[in-house]
Length: 500
Image 1 (cartoon, rainbow, N blue to C red):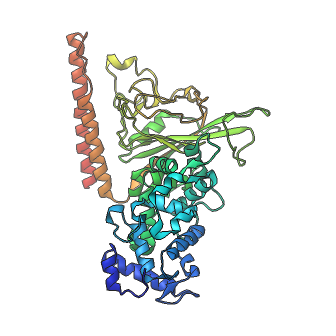
Image 2: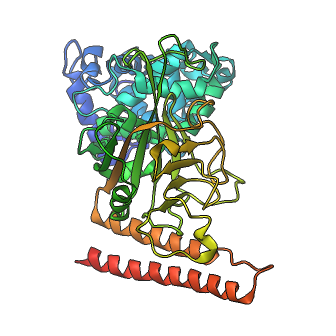
Image 3: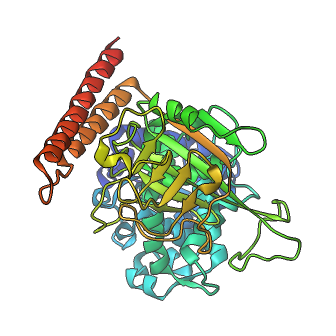
């Protein structure tokens, strides 16, 4: 890249619009003024580092890459501006460079920069085919994810400094039991699947710094202290769950701690039913060990935990309004997730044939049809399953010790949420958080959409067609129609509240 091109020529060479280009030029002027750089001519590494206070090592690697793209081996204006296009634009928008960088997704480009693979500095000689020959170590993968998590840091802080627990939780899931290196392409495929928003986060991170400050990333605020999650874990949700882009706060609705509280299903139910917004339910399962017992599956026990306890974190994200049984709560955006010992999401499984996301059955519910009384004879919270039975997770409302978890159901993707040997749950902590949107208009739009999803689900409910006497058939139809009318009435009432 030449270093004497005019700004007009830059506009012609780059896909950055005029405002983005102006912002990028302002940033270049600021960074190049830091010695030993030369104002308006080139940026020294000392100047570049000032833009990466939360991600110092990544900043140095990015600088090394940008510098390698210059014909004069300095980060001049043209090199800087055109490089930003690679980090802030989608592949279809990029028309800079004659090499193959533009065919890489942002996370692939950043991964090669992070591990400092020599091929990434070859400019015109870079070949996409080389990706099939590259391997990545567990350590390199952890550093890369740590750098991604740090992109979500509040100004002046680092989410993942010496503490890389969150990064390890994700890498534990991707590497599984592998102790050797992993093929880079396989790693890329896994990363894209586990944290599908990684490219969006990278683009917003670099755009917020260099081309458009309105894209700066801001994690939702935890309005209360949590005994289960922190901002690092919240960062993993941000990378994997689209709802968190529209969220400004998580508000604590309910908290249970063994030894201090009595678990009350009705209290939990009241808090869930009071919300029109999505909710996040977090559980902690604990295994208490004798002095000489050892967990067979644990790769690297957390030294910060009590020597004779092993903790597991998991939960459920509900994207719609809660309803009491026999109605089902949730839609295709709902998911089960594990956090510890590894971070993993379980979305609606392809070919599962069911959409029975969650069932809330408390003694505050309306009278049940006789045909459902046997199936709904237990109070509790059921997640996944076939609707009224065979749940993936069951939180027992009468006796918390009777709660259980399985590795398969008819709604969510198959897999171990916790360790394979765990079927009986010993829950010592529960937290419920409401997801507060950035604007009230988003609240209203979300409510309307999820309410219509619920009504459509009721319309699709099966009415028995065979071996049913006419009286039972009529009652089934009446019951379904009554629930539809109730849902429509609820929508009208809530619409009036939003309008006030």
